[in-house]
Amino acid sequence: MSVKVLLDTDIGTDIDDAVCLAYLLVHPDCDLLGITTVTGEPEKRAMLASAICRRAGRDVPIYPGAERPLVVEQKQPRAQQAEALGSWDHQNAFPRGEAIEFMRETIRSHPGEVTLLSIAPLTNLGLLFSVDPEIPSLLKGLVMMCGLFKGPIPKYGPLEWNAIGDPHATAIVYRAHVLLHRSIGLDVTTSVNMSPEDFRNTFRSDLFKPIQDFADIWFRDWPGTTFHDPLAAATIFDRNACGFTKGYVEIELTDQQSLGFTRWTEDPAGGHEVAFEVNPAAFFEHFISTVHP
Image 1 (cartoon, one colour):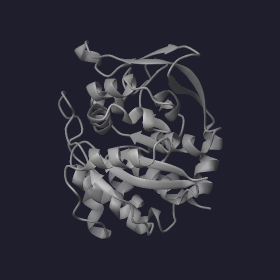
Image 2 (cartoon, one colour):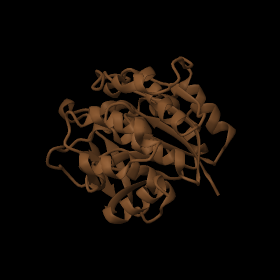
Image 3 (cartoon, one colour):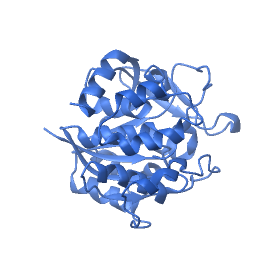
Image 4 (cartoon, one colour):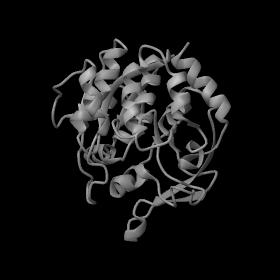
């Protein structure tokens, strides 16, 4: 049976969002109900998502969402990859101010059936759960690329980008009670990497042509890409993608130097499920065979 998915994304900064979207568009078991964008320049991010959807021949509803965090200053003001939009057909006009209501209505129209996939700072989700506190209980599952749970990682330190992008929204989301409340954090995503050369040589299908252009902008500043978001998406469809541990996640909101820190406590009765294991070779085999069947 297909899985109904809502995607919330900050596509346009790191290239892994675009790669994740391509995976969802071609996965035979994914029923992508809609896309919402978040953080700086959400309309441009919506255009990037539209370019990939149109390349895939898909008409997916796309709604630009919140541009600014609830309280803290914006850490991600630009959608850099929009520089490459001129080469690709895309939608230019989108409904404004309707993203949260779109998510709300979609979930309420399919109670217990929708998996909400968040691969971005959590402003949209924090607003959604605040506007309609019943929404978490109506989800089939909440799957997030968010957090860091084992401790500091070289190059990244003790904090994770999506969690700190809007720490107050992150706290709202982690306090919500969802049947499946799953986090795939840097502890495992940093194990699935690809060089620019391998990326260009691996993803050569027609769908990936605009993504390759977007990736060239990312590779100006980064020596490769990490499949943070695609790994989170893969856990929805491949039960063996990651190994999970139950527990509780609390979000730091008092120490200004560590706002958004994800404090983890293992507990078999916990309401949160956190990824602690990944097999990179198995993940890439699954992912590449899906996007290039």
